[in-house]
Image (cartoon, rainbow, N blue to C red; front, side):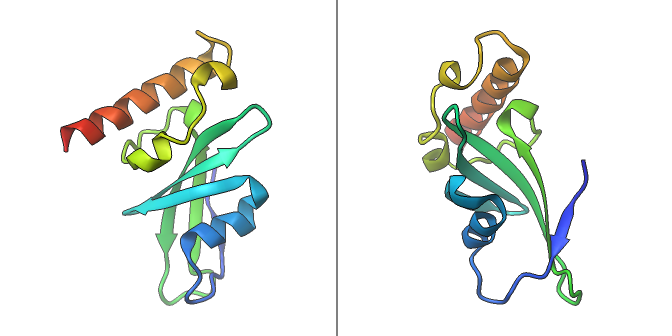
Amino acid sequence: MGWTFFHREPGLKTLDVFKKEFGAGVLDGASNGGQFYMVYQAKEGKLAIVCLIQYRRFDTFNFGYKDMSEDMGPFYYNCPERILKQLDPLEKLWLPNSWPYNEAKKWREKCWENIKGR
């Protein structure tokens, strides 16, 4: 999957950018370097979406992102604790021992390990 680029108006907060892009399902979010972690309200419950983000200073299309839900097993584990605490239990989102469940479980565990290791 590719990147999405567009013009981002100066002064607009990253959370507001993603609320505009993803709609009312975006409940909270936080930047961490070149990553943005958000709590997203899906039909099944609250899950995490990880977005890689890029800024292009001298380009009309000055902001880009690549989004991945936690069940895709993203290799980015810097999700803030406050975001992780808002997510619904995995059992509410996916069938236990299914591929999405297992990938999301590994991702959450690695994020918690990062938090505890700081």
